[in-house]
Length: 427
Image (cartoon, one colour):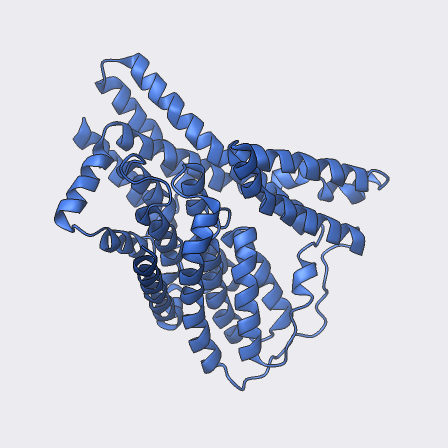
C-alpha cells in the first residue's frame, strides 16, 4: 500500500508541476490525487472508523486555512472594487527609474505583508502600466515586484499562503516570525533591488499619455478611503484577535468580513442597484480565485494521507540521516520551491516534523517560512506572484532566467545568511 500511495502522490505532484505544458489545471490534479490516495488508504486499512476519524481531522485543519483565505481574498476584492488601492498608488511619482524602482520595491514589500503576494503583484504591475510606457522597463519592474512581494509575504503570518499555513498550524507565532524573518526578508529584496537600480541609473521615467486613474466613477474619495483603511485594518487586526481570544484566525477574518459587509451595505444603501452591484460583498465573492481555493483543499488532503501513514515521518528520518543538517535541508526545500509549488512542499514539511519534536517558533519552522516564501522568486513559475506577473506582462521564462533569476538567487542566499547569523547570535 505504501508504495502505491507514494507512486500516486508523485504522479499527482508531477501533474501539478507540469500544469502549463500539460494544459491540465493543477486543481483538477490535486483533487484526483486526493481522491485516489484516500481511496487506496481506506481500501487497504482494516479499521474504517479510524480512517473516517483521521479524514475528519484533516478536513477540519484544511477548512481553517480555506475559510481564512476566502475571507482575506474577499476583503481584498472589495477594497479593489472601490479603487481603494489608489490611496497608495496615486502617491508613487518620481522622474528617475532608479528612484521609482526603490519606491515600488519598498511599497510592494510592505503591502504584500498586509495583503498577500499575489494580490500585491497584480496591483503593482497594474500601476506600472500607468507609470511606464516602455515594455522593457515594465519587465524589469515586474521582476523586482515578484521578488519584493514574495519577500514581504515571508515575514508576515498573513502575507503568504505557506506562512499562513504554518501560523494556523501552530508552528509559528505572529511576533516571533516577524522579528526573526523581517531582516532576512529585507536582505532578500535589498540585494537584487540595489543591483537593478544601479543598472537603471540615470534613465528617465517615460510615462504613457492619457491613462485614467480610477476604473469607475461610482465611488467617492471618502468611500475609497473608508474601504481601504477598514479592509487593511481588519487584515492587520486578525493576528491580534488570535492572540487576545486564542480563537483560530479564520474566526477573526470572518468576523471582520461581516463588519466590512455591514459597512458596505450601509454606505451604498441609497445607490441604484446597477451602481452598487459591483461594490457589494456578493459580487466580491464571485470574483475570488476559487480555483486556487480548490487546489489548496486537494493538495492538503493529499498530503494528509502521507502524514497519517507515517510516510512523511520516515522521509524526515531519511533526510536527517542522509544530510544531517536542518539548515541545508530547509535551504534545499526553498530551492525546490522555485520549480514546484511551495504549498505542497510546506504541507509535506509540516507532516514530516512534529510539533512535539520541533515546538512552535523552532528554528526549523522560521527558516522554512523564509526559504519557502522567497525561494519561489528564483524562477518565474515558482510562485503565484511570478505566474501572475508572467501573464500580465507576457514575461518569457528564459528572459526571467537571464535577467532576474540570478538576482533573486543572490538575494535568497543573502537573506538565508542573515537569518543563520542572526539565529546564532541570539541563541
